[in-house]
Amino acid sequence: MAITDTDVNELLTAIRAGGDIDVVRQGVALMLQALIDAEATARIGADRFERTDSGTTQRNGTRDLLLSTKAGTST
Image (tube, rainbow, N blue to C red; front, side, top):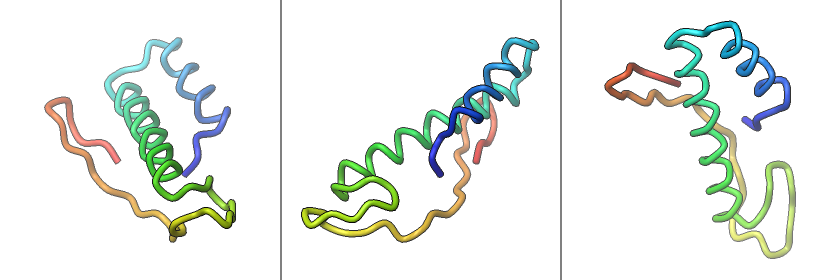
């Protein structure tokens, strides 16, 4: 799941509207996904949907996981 401009704009709009804890959870999920994608890109040697001769492996889909924190659970 790549983060799009639309995702960021929706989050910023919710924050400006005085969003609650769900907005924080959504922001955390967005940032964590960006970090996961960046780590995968660095490890694999290719961006999503990119094929390279130097790539060491390939991306094979994604799955939703739950992250539990003191502030609650996020997907």
